Amino acid sequence: MAATPDPASTGVRTLIPARIDRLPWSPFHTRMVVALGVAWILDGLEITVASAVADTLTKPETLHMSSAAVGLLATIYLAGEVVGALFFGSLSDKLGRRNLFMLTLAVYLVGSGLTALTLGNGAGWVVFLYATRFVAGMGIGGEYAAINSAIDELIPARYRGRVDIAVNGTYWAGAVLGTIGTYILLNHVDLSLGWRLGFLIGPVLGLVILLVRRHLPESPRWQIMHGKADAAEESIKQIEEEVEHGGRSLPPVDEKKAIEVTPAERIGYVALARVLFREYPSRAVLGASLMISQSFLYNAIFFTYTLVLGKFYGVSSEATPIYLIAFAVGNLVGPFALGHLFDTLGRRKMISGTYVVSGVLLAITAVLFYAGALNAITQTIAWCVIFFFASAGASAGYLTVSEIFPLEVRAKAIAVFFAIAQCFGALGPVIYGALIGTGEHPVRLFIGYLLGAAVMIAGGLVARFLAVDAEGKSLEDIAQPLAAAGRRGRTRAEGASSPFST
Image 1 (spheres, rainbow, N blue to C red):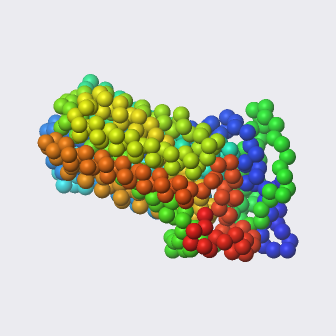
Image 2 (cartoon, rainbow, N blue to C red):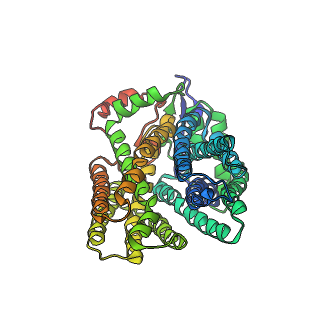
Image 3 (cartoon, rainbow, N blue to C red):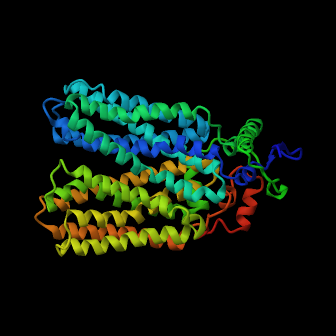
């Protein structure tokens, strides 16, 4: 079953993708998901900590920053995520998944760790603080590209949907951890020390995970597509031996599932644009629609959550962490409860369903809000129900862009759509912050909620018509590698050059 050179060409005939997809679930997969999936926990943790300590950083006993200067921290962190995703996404396709998920975590550790060493509020220290937040953001942005690629390429096809969605959903476990951690630190530790310890929660967790990641293999799929046949064989054997060591027997692989690949040269973002818009235009529209709609809704609601509680329901800032935890739990439960349905009922039904249902529920909640029928508790319950579905849908957006494009450009494709989503999502807090204002005009927020509902429903309708039925399919069947022998001829025969091909 080893990858063997084809004497008639420079290609390599391999069964490695089929060998990965026939694997049963094993402790290896659990360890891999834990080690790699922590990326989303760290992102949720970072954003929650930064939000929780925002007011603290304006106090004289800490950094005595202005509100505008503190608000800029979030913008710089998000900008770092975009730059990191694009930069490290390209490197992940070029240098490998393992190299990058080690590097990006190290970058995050340095950035977030140094944030806690901001010792003053002079111009130099402010620049230092902004620089460390940008570096931390770069590390997390790079994680999104490298980790989604690695998980999808190492998880057997029949589990890929539920695992990817659950892993993306753990962002909210980080939000819960960050909320609880900062609540304790800011209320029971000296403020000058408490906010610093808050920014060290993530690096401590990341340092432990870095040690676990050291023992994970490179993606055999990436290796075989880049001419590293021997290394790919060694990686897949390591995985198979670990599975068999746990008492699981592996069935033989059908030789008909072998594919032949000719390692391709490096593919840049210009070549990626050609792949997206020439061969997969409808998939590009699908990916952009899903990522933009979920990012806009999430940033709009999450970053203004405490404003709504305070301005419209009179909830004190000291009590908002309790509501935030409830909101985060609703978001966390959704992907775990619904994830398996993306592999059984299918991607198209579940993606379109979660987007449309969350949009409709948001519209209903908007009407109840405008009618004055809600209080802080019932509003929070409503949001928990809405985002139970929206969270699974948002995670499916990341799953979609990571599985519907060829392996050679997978990480870059994730990076591009992530960057697009972040840019559009950044508009959400600005728009909704203006709509909330002083809380004297609920009709403005009512219109804003209807806008968010329309955006999500539109994303669901796009998925209904353009989603790829990827459930249970090998990645190579969903999108044939660019390096696959004879790919161009088969692509034309299958009509992939049509503007409506998927």
